[in-house]
Image (cartoon, rainbow, N blue to C red; front, side, top):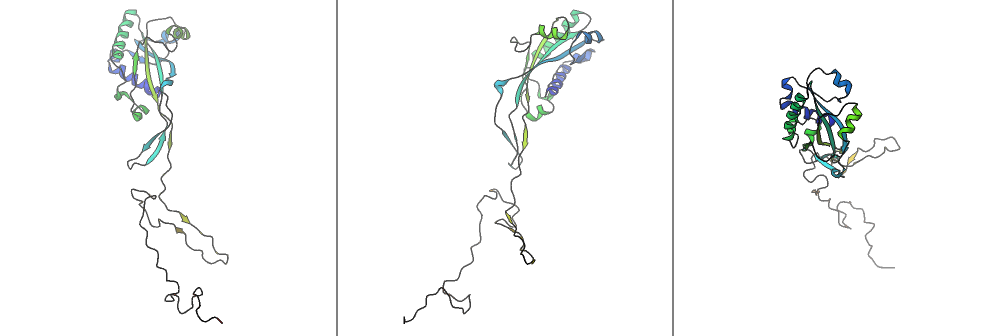
Length: 250
């Protein structure tokens, strides 16, 4: 996610025409050793602070569906982070540095959100807005003086760029829906004869469960008619053992 925000900021500043006049755009920390090695006008966009916006944190999961409306995955909500950059200009004269900073400030000040054409990777997949704040008054992280002290350099004019960036939640694939009926298998007889074939209960031969799925109501064939008690039509001439014998009692 951080490298995607870096790329978006780079594309935003490049589109403004800053690099057309031979100005380098880098994301290196502006240390004293780095400043001594540069040999061209340079804009440094240094990321120095990363903090989560805990007020935006959410719980639960969001389901993802395919074109048939089936759940294919579940994803936790995105988490939001404040990325703070120190933007500085480096030339041989302070007047040229201030001119470059003015161009950078003009470009960033007219942008409230990072344009979607500059989104890449997970930013495109999430489709969320990425707010941008330039030279904000409230300092939640380290002060510029602390940053310059840590870099080992002297304090100079700079612009604080704050980007509120979403980080995609964890995605867990969902199990496929059950489309086969229950299959019953019986063990082979002890005498070694051929066992009965497997039986598929209720949905034998069904390949498409329909809109209601396998839990939907289905038409079942009527059960075979049973012979009336005492009717020997289908049982031959054998007497019914359950039929009550009539005759004189001796």
